[in-house]
Length: 146
Image (cartoon, rainbow, N blue to C red; front, side, top):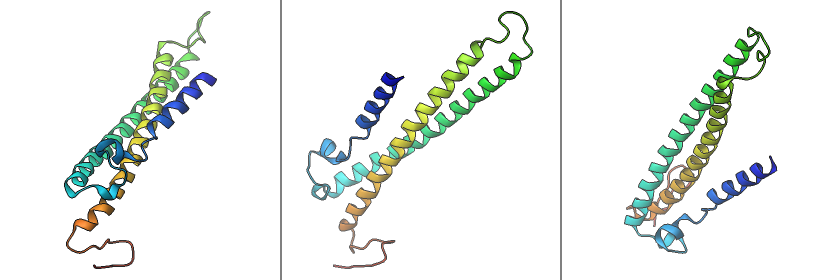
């Protein structure tokens, strides 16, 4: 169990270690150095990543619920079985546990991808403001024109 927890932490920190995503994609040290075309390309990539995160999250929730239903269904049938092997779990329980664990993992990966892509999208949109005719950002509370 400790090894599994350590591996999960390692994977989580490896996946979440993309704080400066623009350095890996465009080889710049600051997001302000990107031009409008690069920002639009990064925006389209982040929108695709948001959609992928939403899909992974939805699929993970569905698979996890299916696993839970399989486990509960087998547990309700178990009381009616008789004999020496009557109370032992069956293949349905094993499939339910696999679905439940797989659904939880898929949901965690999907939510992580979704939130990271949303953060990237926010950064990109804030940088794209400087390429508009008027440098203003709605929702901040102040409208500043240069």
